[in-house]
Length: 174
Image (cartoon, rainbow, N blue to C red; front, side, top):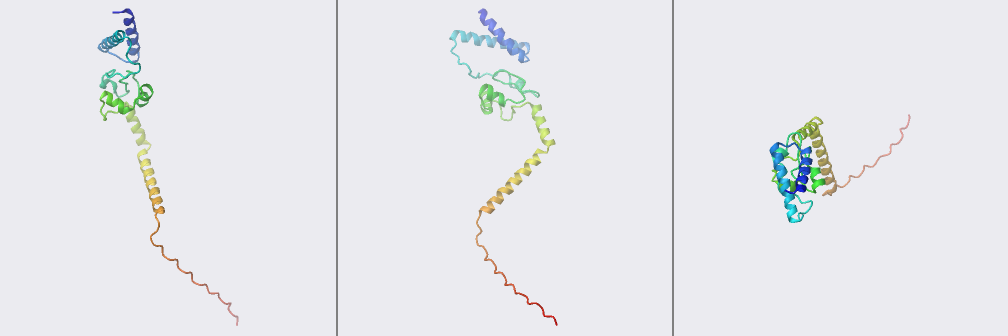
């Protein structure tokens, strides 16, 4: 083993372990994986492209999607309430691409379960569903009114002629 590779491996794994809770087995597996990758890069002369997205997830799906947080399967970062912004900013990925890459089912939310529940509860308490329904009804009525006004009337009835007004003569006093 080359001493520099061992030092690099230790540095990388310790940085990763500082932000991610790992068991002993996970730590050993991570050390072996990082060392093998660095060794491969050394023998190939660094031909691997920087910024490529790995095909293997950084952790199992079950560990990535927990009740209180979501973790990124690409870089292993944890502590997110939702992954959408992180995927766009850090990896330039859309959620659909991320799901496809790691075979994440559409039924699996990319948000923490507790976060989703809190948002749902707040929406129900603030009566957002009823407000949304009212807004949709108002928009539909407005749209229907605009469509009615745009349609020409088929046959307009002729206007009635106004009755002539008779002038009353003043009554004569007797």
